[in-house]
Image (tube, rainbow, N blue to C red):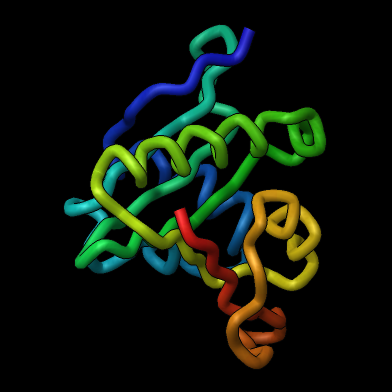
Length: 135
């Protein structure tokens, strides 16, 4: 059984690093305003298997550093986390939700009515676009 719960931002770092940017230094996965965010983890048998961070400001919610352990991807855990942060963003007063999405994950975000609202840009060799939706 997978449980989603709030976690400290420091708890997100190992998964962020190992899944998203394993070739970068550990500090690369830290976000300047991590302490101000809302961080959530998916746990199975008390093992952290996926993380996501939510930042809300001026009615806009941005999620960042969404990562699931590679052997737990494509099993519905990310879907549960997305539904959770959509609910949380609304609860926190946000009217829009957005992220910088890796293009290889674009179809996943489209399933949540998110649409690309920017040109493609790169973080290192990885193509991204800003995706957004109204809440």
